[in-house]
Length: 446
Image (cartoon, rainbow, N blue to C red; front, side):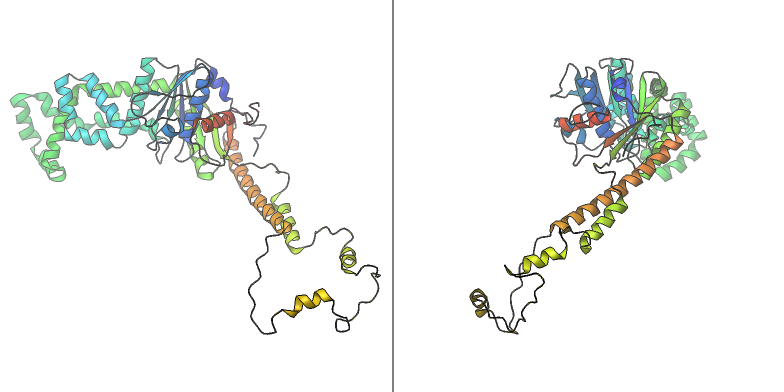
């Protein structure tokens, strides 16, 4: 499948080489190759001289395996085997550890220990809805603040909606600043006997109801957590807002990753529109696992017709036709037109007697003859049918991609041809990077 000349190609290498590009965010729906794309971009940028860190939030450990690292954790680890003057580091977000680091950095030791040991905090940090996406934003902000790398490549969290990465900080901030949290904070803020009086009189009905619904111990854990976190709530919202502004800054580039399938490209189109509405800088679309053919001029219809003709024996080349067959069957020295002697009047030849003398009598069972291998015609017909199926896939992918480009002709597109197997090492990531840049993997040229 080739791009429509009217669609601007996505120029990956200039994007990676630009020193003003400090953050690349790979986003899209699940299962479209975001992790592989992020890792391939990191490898290519490092081998072109950048100092890169790849942050993945994918719980699968494919990134570590492909980069030759036994395990990834919350600390960037350098990847060995990079060619060129750059460096590549990789890390996998540890959601709970990132939350713990925030608490340890913004609370005194006693208060930090009280928070970390609180059962409600442990539940919140381990699996509260939106926490993973919020912590991804926190970690991105931390990496950017360290200024140790000149390029950060982010693989966004796998989720049903590709918009969660943008929405989660606002959702978690709204939760922490919400009426429920402020209500639970009120007794602690009033302090002492006044606080207890307020709790006993003003909140007795509410806490009694919540205690029945949630359990009294759970409610007390929440109140203790809220009291300990009171001074930190504003910091969560402030940092989330700062990271959100960072994503809107000129040094950030979003790459929407999709497969040439209807649902994936519909999600990509929705995400493109959302990025535009939020003022996020979109670099382009990466279309993964695109199928191609070296014989695209042979249509599916013609391939199927040729296969049917071969299977029915209508286009077998026999030179002079059936005359050649008759000539080969005629005895030497005889005329092709001479009548053949009846079978009964012919004298059996010695070799014929020897072949038939030991043959079983009529009616006796014989073993099945060995099956013959498929003929050249059969093999060719099978290949033609496979080609017809491939051309149908190409046509469907082309039609799906054309719908997207008709809706968003301003979005540059890079197509990455499907590989015969999974990417599991640096060589595979390097190949993906070459294809992202629009080069021929065999020659390394465009």
